[in-house]
Image (cartoon, rainbow over all chains, first blue to last red; front, side, top):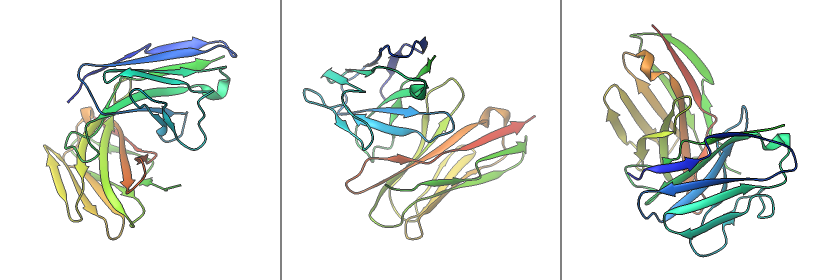
Length: 116
Length: 111
């Protein structure tokens, strides 16, 4: 299965600022996703990062708040814009070949974000 | 919005005990179910991908079963060890939608 490098691993940010999280995969992957887990909540899909086109956002998430880039099949970034304390979460990128691949999805190590 | 539930929310077992937990999901338009283990400060790790009603998967001391008609999957751990301590997540997908994760079961195995 793929190996993912996700950076930064953690950060403490001031409200009103933005943070960009990077996800680098060691092989080309078709599917790449961005998730977040707010304290005490389930892991929730933010968007599907599409190579060469705009990301597909889930209900409740918008591009202005979470702009995503995916310039090629091995790299993606997620920006958390104009942060507030409610954005304090673990953010994870995830990749997969197919939904029924025996390997499941592979996740990055996560970015633990605290907004003060 | 799909509702995926897991129970119990957390449990503590003694080393050597066997345990099991449940993932419940909508029974219509089933596509696939994943189980993940998420240890603190690490990435979620895929345990099983289950796609057919009646599927039974096994990896070492951990096994899982799937009942798509009634909408549940069980995860079993035989002879729990401290290194099994983690949060166990299930993720459900039906046709036309992305995976939805359950809230997880947090397992603590006491030596």
